[in-house]
Length: 155
Image (tube, rainbow, N blue to C red; front, side, top):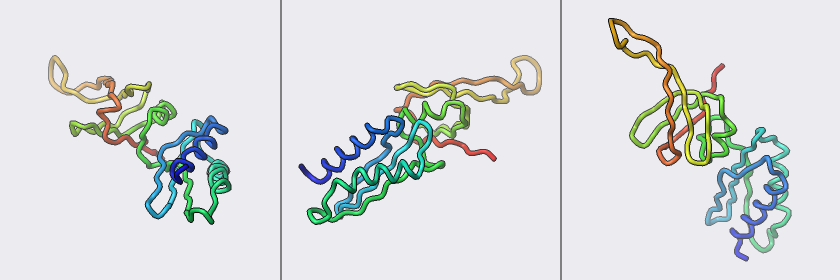
């Protein structure tokens, strides 16, 4: 079994033992630097990272292949990449950029395997008379149209 396949199998096994965790990214450089980014339905603890790291490291032989290993959680400002991350963040405010260049800051009110639902308020000119009125907006955005989506952190 090739080194990359062995690492992938060990990682998959470690995540199966921890169903609340899921993989965001796995990269293995030509110099065998393994970088794993994980997220969890209830967040990721330091212990989660240690457990996943040990599950991989203790089953690889450094005498056979020298490697370095980095297991980290997706940071608070990291872009959302997979549907499971969007589902976990329903109710939070996102900044979403789309392929046509639009950028929207709105509340994520829904997410499934194909798209997300955003809702926000906007000021628009009144249909009758002068001035503006606040209107409720809603948009369904397919994942294929999203170039970047980041949770907006408010203090």
